[in-house]
Image 1 (cartoon, rainbow, N blue to C red):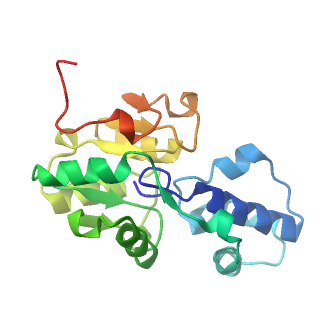
Image 2: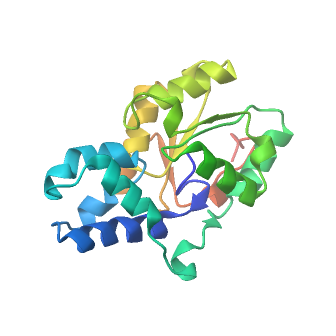
Length: 206
């Protein structure tokens, strides 16, 4: 995963969604906004468009991505340990894929800013799948393109929808509790606070 797993963009994402609901006077609570994490924006809006009378999904999506936020909100910093882990895995010749609910242009830009784009062998973005997370399609697509069986890969995810997608694909899954509680990620095989808790190669004797 990308947002919340490799880069901490969740504050900006939540601010945009909150502004959309506030602008239109649509009802929401923090739990609803948090549930959007890891999902494609248009799919979220398709389920909630009834809260925005007279507006289409495409109109609402264009509006939410157009919002200009302050630099303190927009600043996207790496999740602790993320860059070091990706570089360590890449240095050992292990193929790496990123499966994101974001658009390709956005994802390419984030990975470039992290300085790890050249280490990513496969990028599966929102445009590459018919169904977004929690559907397993994205992870299955990534595994197919990497030439590995899902059971031989490991998924890292920060959101319940992403964990559900990876598990449905048959992948061992590490929950990264950067944007959600450990309890919300309990379906993962292992939950860590951030990626400083993960090393490569794994230390099975530790």
